[in-house]
Length: 183
Image (tube, rainbow, N blue to C red; front, side):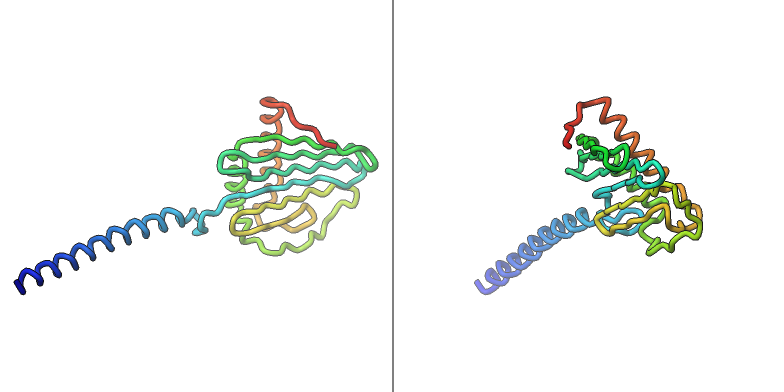
């Protein structure tokens, strides 16, 4: 009888350890799946929003394009434009693919924008030229810069690359659906 109790206790311990191991395995697997690292070692980093603005200069025209995450499939595109000071602003809103934010995030990573830090002002500025600015928000960071700053070596094309993605987004949005216009 004593041996039977020992066998039952030993079996219970083995089953308990096995059950705890299985539960532990699935908890660890769930945690690891949720915290996969991207190529730069950032946990689940992705672009949440990007704003591009162009304004100032002699003509006084202004343009603001904001692309903001809705979910992992769609984003909201807002385009605000004006022909000059005192002119009415026109606002257009579209629902677009999240893929455009992913393209912007790839540019962000390629140029290592998160590592730029505070950029110094450029010594060369055209006083009558419009200023282009970009603000990118990711899960892990927010970076803002504009055309009045000194860019790190080989990164001067980032505004152009981001603008190209945003213009592609606008073109696709305008060809696929009617915007809601707010004034």
